[in-house]
Image 1 (cartoon, rainbow, N blue to C red):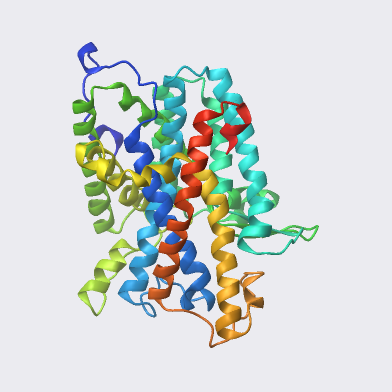
Image 2 (tube, one colour):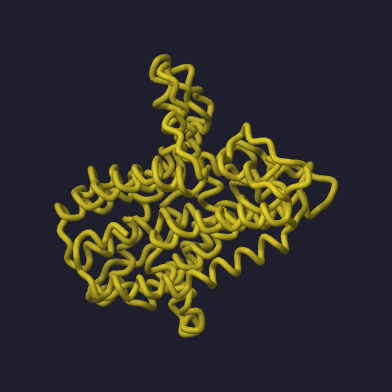
Length: 407
């Protein structure tokens, strides 16, 4: 599928409306849903036996359908959030923020996110230990670096930024065969851009690249260009969102069926029909393949169309999380980690394995919880954060200091 297959309504004056001054409710609701679902994966990471014993929940030879789906449903979070982050930048421009101000904000906030990824979130969120020689480049890293790239190109026309984003999304799998070793002394750069793995430096630093950057640049840039649909009349926009989402989802199905291009891992027939479907859905996330992005962003566009309908008022509580995603993200990880430490001490008499989660961590064989426990922890954490998120969202509405926008 390419961008020409997506129906774009003609840009006639009657289809364009005055940009709204307020936040877009449907965007906030979808972002909130994404943040809630994201917490499920983090609860699984710290509580479920498969994660604690380093079993891949997507490994069809060892997983169950429920464990697989618990992990798979969270695949929607990163691409949709990154896409909507780009959309949020465009909406800021719609509300009158200049390109110069946006460029500086994106650059400085991008650096802030990368700094937090490599320090506070790693030391006091994921590991509960300070290690000055080991760093993980994950979600905030990809968002921050993508913001820095967007800061550099934001003065280009919207069509050029959109083309840049779509080109990266559609073509990056053509470079899957390139190995970091072929770059010689610059092998670390290709690892940062397109190959997940660990970089060992001569000075003794270990850099774990979980989110190679190349596709993520494109996702945020495409999200920025997508923001232009919020200049259209609501009825036209809703139809376009639905058509575009269906087109992207069908594009995923067709492309995935071919097993020719768009993903490193081909799907295979399994002994059980359901597991054949799971194999079909098991697309590469690190880095996100074209199939992975079509599979996740397509339904996200459909959701945005549906969330503009009147019935969406019934799920307004999700909007609270979507208004303060960074606040929620930075706090819910250490909370889930702390709960895992406490519960493990109570149930198993030890939690040492939780303080420095790494590939070398050895977890006692009796340690680990079932999926019902994971879901219980997830629900309790999400509910516990609702009042705090509501308070912080109200605080951000009242306070207009520049530093508040970094949280």
